[in-house]
Length: 313
Image (cartoon, rainbow, N blue to C red; front, side, top):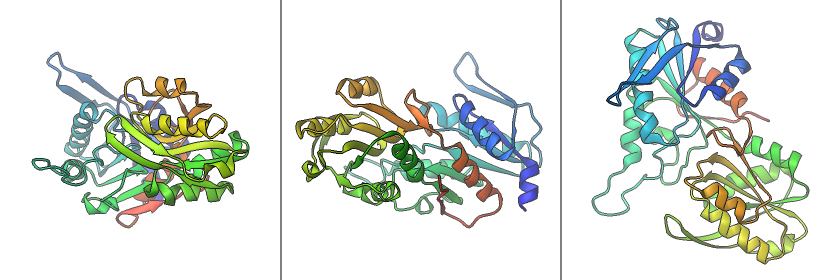
């Protein structure tokens, strides 16, 4: 099956995902498909595949930051590919949106993570993503009805930190992050501590960093899966400076940085920001095209349902 997949797979990039799609194609020698996507004057999305796709494995690459703008085009692209007779449609979603509302927190709310999962599951045969924001949903197979593969970014974060930061100590955002912060720290061979965080609103966060004084001679590295408002990192940076630490590095998987969050974080006196290219951002310096390509090949070869793919850096 591997030889067949290598011949028929064709990769299409939703707007803004061209660089990632090119990296994925280079990693495996796949064809980058040609198509047209545009908007009609009334705002409707128009999609036209220029490369032949009948009988082929179509791979659509689309990171879902700004999801309400991107998701409909992705849905239509997958639907049109099926209509035109492709063999299967795979979605490569480096950032998977709508994982936050995974429970009903207040009366009148819905569990939108499940609704969004049902929407995407209806138009694809499998999906690949990077470190989805899992809390009450423990694995994607609980809400998605198609096979999925999760690329774990920890080895690639570890490689970058080991190469760029002298004598680091990792600082994780909360207790839930301990498993993957521990993995990064163990790969590097450095210590780590976890924040005590209290969030009182979307943009109001207070933190403490217990035990950090023991590592005052080390360079702190704040590690998080998602940076949205940046408030947690800003609050942590302030506590670290108060403890007499060096300016911290901020290393994130998904660099959302809504509004002026990135500028505010830099103004808070951090040493710098490094992110993966799972979300396109000026801070991108950790390339995940290779592990994503490996995960796609894993799916094309008919991997079991709902798997985690850890590719060593």
